[in-house]
Amino acid sequence: MAFTPDPRAVDSPRIAELAAYWQRLRGERTVPLRSQLEPAEIRDLLPYVLLVELEREPFRVRYRLVGTEVVTWSKLDFTGLYLDQLDFSDIEEPDVFTRGYREMQRSGRPQFGRIRTFKVQERMLYYECGLLPLSSDGTAIDRAVAIEDYEKLSTDHLKAMPASHRK
Image (cartoon, rainbow, N blue to C red; front, side, top):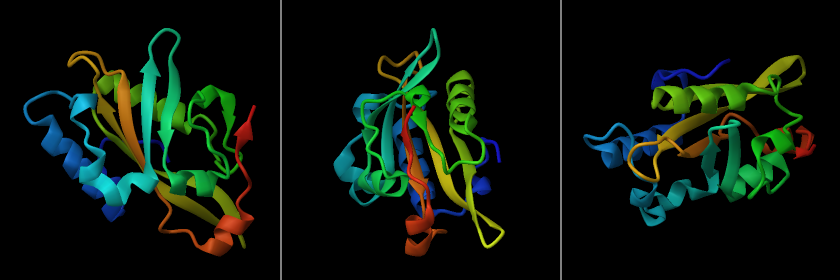
């Protein structure tokens, strides 16, 4: 599924909690400032959170921080790497994140989606994700806070999930 600005596209309480926090930070602004984000205020979400830097020309996504649960499920710590340097071999649509981040940056609106991953016994599995825009200067959308929730997957799925790797 492609990302959508509709938060009802996901069921995750974790994603809803981060989206509500983002909304409080935003206030009257179009998007919150990156400097407003206080990790202590979202402590329980941190294992699922990614902090992202967005470059415009050419468009690139750089992962500045990757939470421990994301590392566990992807089987790779990709902190400091660019999205285009990674092969998330478990994902059915390899460019889904690029499209999601582009739309988030273009529109200034959070994006929500279910990321289709691999099949187990002919059943397609998925996890849920939210991409929320941030700004370092109050004008440009050049940062994001993202969250991935693997609640729909089990530890047996984790064992079966292929590892991500650098291209």
